[in-house]
Amino acid sequence: MKGGGVGVSSSYSLPAKRRWKCFVIAVLGLVFLSMLVPLVFLLGLHNGFHSSTGYVSEQRNSASNHFPVYDQRNAAHSRKDSKVNQSTLTEDLIRRFAPTLPENLGNVSIDEVHNDANGNSMPENLPKEEVKKNSRSLVKAKPEENKIGADESEMICELKFGSYCLWRQQQRGEMEDSVVKRMKDLLYVARAYYPSIAKLSNFDKLSHQLKQNIQDFERVLSEATTDKDRPPGYEQKMMMMEAVIRKAKSCPVDCNNVDKKFRQLVDLTEDESNFHMKQSAFLYKVAVQTMPKSLHCLSMRLTFEYFKSSSIEQDLVKKFRDPDLYHYVIFSRNILASSVVINSTVLHAKESAKLVFHLLTDRENYFAMKFWFFNIKYGDAAVQVLNIEDSKLYNHHMVGQLYLSLPEEFRVSFHRLDNIASSQFRTKYLSIFSHAHYLLPYIFQSFGKVVVLDDDVIVQRDLSALWDLDMGGKINGAVQYCAVKLFHLESNLAGSSVEGNSCAWTSGLNVIDMSRWRVHNLTEAYQRLVQQMSKHGLSETATLRAGLLTFQGLVYALEDSWMLSGLGHNYSVDAKAIKSAAVLHFDGSMKPWLEISIPKYRRIWRKFLDPQNQFLNDCNVNQ
Image (cartoon, rainbow, N blue to C red; front, side, top):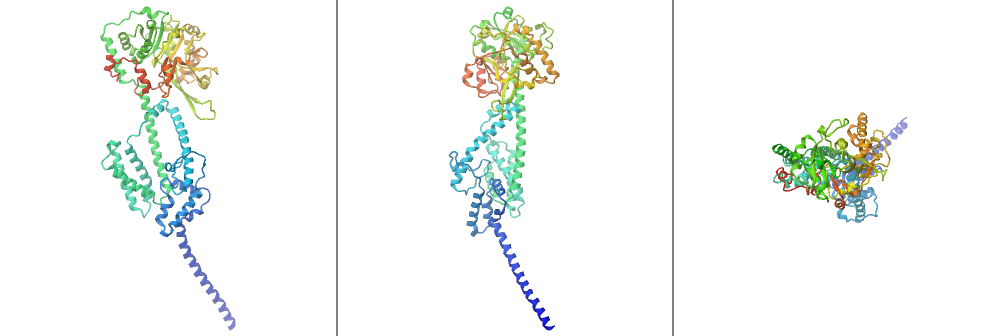
């Protein structure tokens, strides 16, 4: 028993010593691990344990716009003797996750490239050969992508706002108030970094500096909206802000938080930009539809002079009714525009004595126009001013309500047929007869042929050859737009039968065979179509639909050289085509008498105004 006791005692003493040794080893192992783990984080080795799904690459790219993740963070926390190893490890990681790019692209120097196609900074410590190779490919691809994006943006804008987008694009100039805009950019960046910096316990001083600079910039920008309002010492404030931002970029902040803040600021900026674009488009539309102050002044002055003067009667009744003369019809409310049309036609006519102009206007402008064209002479031509609201002009029960309506313009957009897979649109502007044009057979019952001119045209050539045209039984001689065919608009034509090859036509210059018009009863056919479309809820564009269907198969195609359109919306009309065209049509919203008109085309139009006319000078029309 004694020996057994000793044996038992000795058997338990040995395991106790082993347990003590194991415990000591475990403690030493924990101490070693506690020292090793911080060392791993300091050296950046933990980045190598992520999966190969591209997370590290994405994290690096998202942060590289603001600060270099590896170098700055390690410099702040590593010891001096680990800098060499850290730099080597960083280069290895960058090489590992750098994207593979094509080599066979254009030549660009390395100094010209600092960002990739997405705006991300390229790592500065890449080998020169690789940087040069990558930079070439990125710079080569970037202009094409930007061009495609810009084209799509302009296309969407034009579909939504029409010619305003073309006008806005041409009105862009050099950036003004660049200092104020630069200050706003710095303020956005500071605001994006401030929430993340404020959360760091060891950067209270930097957080205070950021807050102070943000408040200073907000105070300055609340008072200065242009560079002229810049306060003294603004350069020092900008330098201080840039220095603070550089410090903030070097801090180990969470890139996701900064990214979210930037996105919030971008969203706010986009909302503000969209608001200003809509506001600008609205003001553009107001400018288009509002009569300029100078034209309103001219109309009032002439009306006043009419009632001051003695009775104005023109002893030209026989000439107005002579069917052997060249009769032009103009629908207009604009004294200035109709005067330019008549003046340009007479100046280029071989025999002005054969020209007779019938100007149809409303009651409001009738007296002003009558006084103007009674006192202003246009060669040997005769000008008759008629009030379209005067019931004495008509002797037909189908006329209905009498009012003046000018040619209506429509912007037609459709998919390009040359590239079916493309989402690009083609846009054309069509000017179509209004309701008032279908009263011509009842107003001029003794005429066999007339030429209808819009009030937004100018004539550059003698038009007498139009009376010798053999239109082969057609009724309407017009310039056609075969890029826009009726089947493009088939879904909008109220289910009517449409000839597939029929081209759309435009007003501006139209030769009308009045005799055949009466034979085909086109006025009654037009009115029936308008009534049918109104029943189907298509009253807004009934003029376009009914006008195209009424003259379907009855349009004689004039040569394109007779009239050139687009000077009221297209900035890139060919200069040679402008010189060779017989008639220039300012179709579109940017009419030549408006301030928003295209300057290089407005100068052509203004040549036919009299700079010495006292009424024009008194109302500042010639300025």
